[in-house]
Every structure is written in structure tokens, then in C-alpha cells.
Image (cartoon, helix red, strand yellow):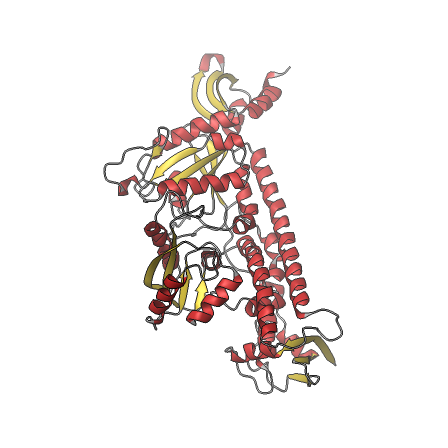
Amino acid sequence: MELIWKYCMINTSTLKFFTKRRYYRCPGLHPFWKSRLLRIFPKCNEARCCADALRLHYTAPVTGSQVYTARVSFSQRHIRSFSTTPSQLKSKKTIPDEGAIGEDDEDFGEDVLDDSEVEELFLQQVPTRVGSDDHRIVIVHPDVKWGSKKPQLTTADLMMAEAVGLVNTLQNWTVVDKIILSTKTPEKRTIFGKGNFKSLTERIKRLPQITAVFMNVERLSPLSERELEETWGLKVFDRYSVVLHIFRCNARTKEAKLQISLAEIPLLRSRLKDELSNLDQQGGGSRYIMGSGETFLEVQQRLLREREMKIRSALEKLRKKRHLLRSQRKSRDFPVVSVIGYTNCGKTTLIKALTGDRGLQPRDQLFATLDVTVHGGQLPSRMPVLFVDTIGFLSQLPHQLIDSFSATLEDVSHSDLIVHVRDISHPETLNQKVNVLNVLKNLQVPERLMNSIVEVHNKIDLVDSYQPTEQDAIAISALKEQGLQELKGAIETAVMKATGRQVLTLNVDLSSPQLSWLYKEAAVQDVDVMAEEGSALVKVIISTAAYGRYRKLFLTN
């Protein structure tokens, strides 16, 4: 018995594209179909993909057309041999703490991440994708001297240094050369004027060892990207594509992968039309899929829309899961403190120092944290508190990228307090602060949280003769564990104010469960036992809600 898989239409440029790629060789099987099978059935090997197991039927193209019709048939025996069970496909990765996704959430998004048609679209429509190759990079920074696009609170050298940091974050990427070139016309297709662009091209041509150019701008238009690539004969990346690749490399959970996939949608959509227009200029032939009434562009746009809907649906389920987790934390009456800051400012190191959580492993690299994780700690009054570790921020990132991570960053808006960590040793620390605050405003963080931010100046051990630049800032070194007690005290004061907690001295009957209840529901500071009376004076820090429950349980007749 045979099972017909599907019909597909492929044009000659697509055939050439897949023919050039390095897939396992299989007698009688075209590389295009081989690639599809390997993605759909990850466990299949060369023995299972032999010519006797598969039959590929081509229908010759109609005269004047460059579109092939192909059909693949499988026998039921080979269908069984190709298949994999859900347990084999299920991710084995460690699930983060309370604030991250549970195992049940891992399942519903799997079809989005492993969708073979979406993966093919990604390969075909993003020819300048970063990929998994090693790269020797030349970084080009357009230095805008005048106008509204001139950067504020920074310099070209500092922006170049950050670009170098992005490249160095990626394994097996090296910076071969750095070029800062002034421009009056950053909106032009070539970014630079004729003279500067000519000298830049000559300099790049003198570097035969490089494999790509990193143009240090927020986003390149598809037209600019294509023209630069054709001129230099090299791949050209912008900040958006490089940061997305860093995200891909660091993504560990389903939520991070879904959010990265969503962030790629605008990139895929903008480049899709450009790719098709390029094929039209080259005489690509008919764009209609036979019998369907859809053009190739319409098919790809529909696939993108379907992919986006799947991702958004999965993220909405994750959003509901996060809401449930927040409700559970709220029912326990634990204060929640979100720790935010520019990427690589030391957020995770600080949380590790505050909580003593040995499971946290801070890394000295950009975007080491892409998922929100929650870690329990204790303030000086023995008040339990939850610290939320968040994704780091970066300048010159498109709104689409931040919007894609809104489900993750939503936890910040629902916290009781925000702690803003700054790398005070960084030369751009002020500019970084402005960028972080702008992102918070774009996320519409409530005014009460914006007005109560606790600012932390981290890495003071790297600054000679540190002098505070803000009156209320707390100076610390998370790595050296300096200044942590002062910071804990400031957090405690702010948390008590934000949550309406109060210090009370209660007369407790020792023959009742009052004392054990207070130890469970409040932060007990001191117990003065009066043995003769069988009672005790208990000093506690307690929330308004908890005190209301206490009165209802023990003080009403």
C-alpha cells in the first residue's frame, strides 16, 4: 500500500539552490526532496533513504515554463521506519525556575519550531542569513556627523566597541578589521557618498580573507543589503541580524525560541518581495502555481501568515501560563523584585550574590540570559522575596525585536519593585541608562514602578576612586560582594512601601497556632516570651492582606 505525501511546485532557481547545498547523497533521490525528508524525519539515515525505499516522479515542465511538478510516494513499511515518537522529539533541556515554562508548555509550540515548510522558506528567502558558518568579519560603522540621526551621549569609537563585543560573543567569529567612515547620507542605498563608498569598497577588496561585512546600523533595507552584497561579493549583516543570531545561539527554552521566531517574521516578510522582484528581473518565468490560482509570492506570504499565527497562539498560551504563575506567587504574598539592566551589566551575578543560588552560572557575554527566571531570596528582616532575572537591553534595536519579547518582559510590569543595575565602569553607562529607561517606557511600565526604581552602580571594583553620580544610587560590586547589605536594606525599604507592609508588635497566645501562622505568613523579627502569662510579644513585618487574615482567624469572636 502506498501513501501519497504531497504535491509541490518548485522553480528552477529553487532547484539550483538545493542542488548546491551539502546533503547526504542518495541514489535516485533529488537533493531537494532529500532535504525535505531529513527535516520531517530527523531519525532517518542514508540506509532508509535508498532509492528502493522512495520513488520520485517528475512531470516535465510545460514549454516555456520553469516550474516542475513532483510527487513522492512512500510504502507503509518505510513510513513506519521513518517515524519518530513524541518522546523522541521532546526536548530534554533543563527547565528554568518557577518563572519559566513547564513541561506541558513545551509541547504546543513544537510544530512551529520544526515546521519543515517554514524552515524551507527561511532558507530560500533569507540568502544573507547568518547561518552556522565561521566568519572573519570587517565591521563598518557609519559615523553620522549631522542631523537628527546623529547619536547622542555616545561616540563612534564607543559604538564600534559595542559592535566588536557583539561579534566576539559569537563562537568562531573573529574581527579582521574595523572601519569608521563619516556619512551625511545614512538613508542612501549605499549608506555613504560616492567618494567614501568607493574608498570603502577598495579597502574591503584588499582583504581577501574576510567572509562577511557587519554594517553597524539598526536595519538595512533589502535593497541596500542586496546592492552591498553584489558590490563586495560578501554577506552583509546589520545589528538586527547579528543580534537575532546571538539570540538563536543562546535560546534554551521553547519560549525564547518562539519569541525569536516571531522577531524574524518582519525580516522574512520584507525580504520576500525583494527576492521575488529580483527573480522577475532575471526572467524567472511564470509565478503561478499550476491549478491553485496563487502566485509563488502569495503562497510564501500565506505560509508566513500561518507561521506567525502559530507562534502568536503558542505565545498567548505562554502568557496565560505566566499569568497563572504570577497569581500563584501573589496568593503566597511574596514580594517580586525585577532586576533589569543593559546587557552584560551583571544582573545574574547580582541575583546569585543576593540569593546564594549556586545553580546560577553568570557568563561574561552579551545576551547570556534570554528567559525570565525567578529566584527566592531573603531580606535583612527575614522577609522572603522573589528576584526576577530578565533579558538584557541593547541600543539601536528595532521595536519589533522588543515587541517579540513582550511576553517575557511582561513580568517586569507586574513586579512590586524594579532594580536597575548599571555597569558603572562602562564608558557609555549614561547612554545605556537612557536606553534602558526608554525601553521601559515603550513597554508601558506603570508610573508607580518607574518612580520607585532602585538604581545600582555595579562593578565599582573596576573604577579608580569611584564617586557617586546619582544621589540615591547604591554602589556595589556583585562579583566581590561589596555593598550588598546596604542594597538589601534599600530594597527592603522600597518593598515595604510598595506593598503596604507594616511593622507591628502583636500579643500572641502561645497555646494557639498564632505564632506558627505568623512564621509562615509574615516576617517575624523578634519574639519576647512572657511565660507566666502564656503569651509572647511578637514583632513582625506583615502585609495588609496577611494582617486582615490574621485578624479574621485569631482576633474575631
